[in-house]
Image (cartoon, rainbow, N blue to C red; front, side, top):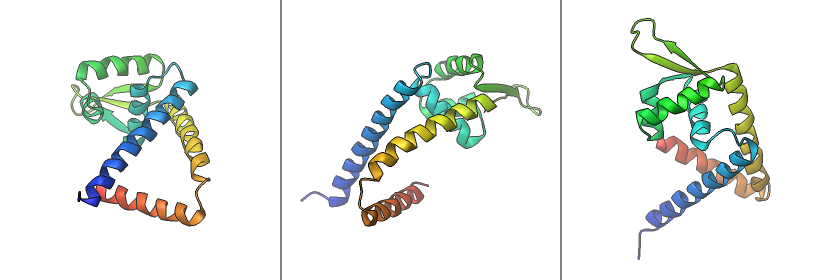
Length: 142
């Protein structure tokens, strides 16, 4: 018999990918002018405050040239700033503008509201256990 933990891990991986995919559809419905990669770039910047272009490319698993073009588009939309490092002028920091912060906060809230509709269908006891398990997994992933 196959390892039950491995089987459940496969299911968890599939379900998280499916949830992410369906939330991407929501994003497309909400803001057609923002691509999924742009959304996740803004979300990453919201979490980290500021990042170098190479860091963003590494986190998203895309090429430096792809991220450079993406950052240029976000800059033109007024969603990010590019600031040279005081100590090393070769380093450029990417940060959200207030407009970018407002947009990502709005989109995050809409995604959370969509998930909350589903979670409300769970019995409270199951919901509490689910919440506990999510926190456990999140802590273990670091």
